[in-house]
Image (cartoon, rainbow, N blue to C red):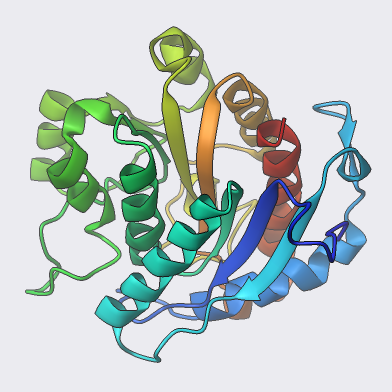
Length: 275
């Protein structure tokens, strides 16, 4: 919806991460990127939240990055190389997922481009495990990998309501940890983040499954879409240098509520972050 055919003129690039190789409960997220695009046809191009229209900006949809089926390491490397090329071309990468481990590729590319990178992590889960059932390449390890790479003091976590006791304790002691809520704590930390390069990684399961049931590991007690759109408006005040929306599984949600919400969030991200 609203994308340009002119890559050179585009300020942002949408790309898909069709991957669900390490999901620990219900699969199907590799189908998320394609279906988000398909349902976007039913979403208006104008955002009343931001008072901007997709016709005001130029962005390019590059399709899905080809990934080797079942190989998480090579898939992450392919995504790293692709997003690295997007940065080299001076464009803002916006990823559609896809399981959350896939984010490790774009995050590495963003950190390489912006050594002072800060991460805003919006999710139901801590994602702070070193491994899951002996496997370090798991969607439950993505934020711990980021902490180990750039330091937990540059990680801001919002909306978290699920994880092990040890993960919660570690987060409280190390990251900027704001469980359960998103918009209100984000307002308080905006002054800390302004002017810094920020990568936003957003898991659809931060929403209560009443609003977004199409995700592999649903957690009750989440935020509603109104808070999600308010959050995007707040993030527009920051220097967002990368964004992804992860863990959308269309087969789990035949109602399409999750996919439609994802499409609207991508619209908001484009209008919030493409200046």
